[in-house]
Length: 189
Image (cartoon, rainbow, N blue to C red):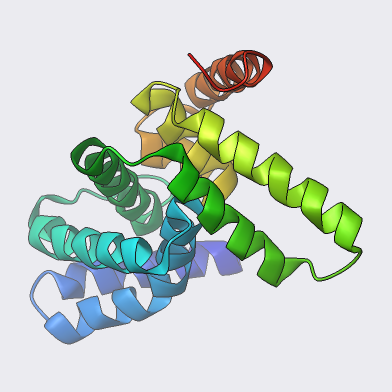
């Protein structure tokens, strides 16, 4: 019942936001922490996450007139924009994997100050996965990012990807298999 009420409240808010900037500001406040966290987890850099977050909300505001309500609501649509901004940033910047790896290590260090030996191993594992993701197709990067780095549910990730849940599951499965292959080869695809 609460999910239905929340979806209806959000739908009304989106409709108001088409004409009222203060309503869009409420959407911004609701989604800012999740969008920024997603962008940060994917880039590993605060500055890049801030740029992507800003650009995504700007695009969302400009595109709100064309937004059509879908199951899952505003969130998946917004996260699709964020994922597209991430893809644009990687294409434009041509970033090296080592930058992302260092960012991932910094993030991991802040999250797990436990046993130093485990911390070093965990840092290496995260850095290796993020570096290997750079060798995947943009579609596979987007699928894995939306499903595992954004905090979205399977349904929300599928909506953000613009696919059915079944199609998203297949893409994630194939992306995971491709990621394993890249990692077995040592990151060179």
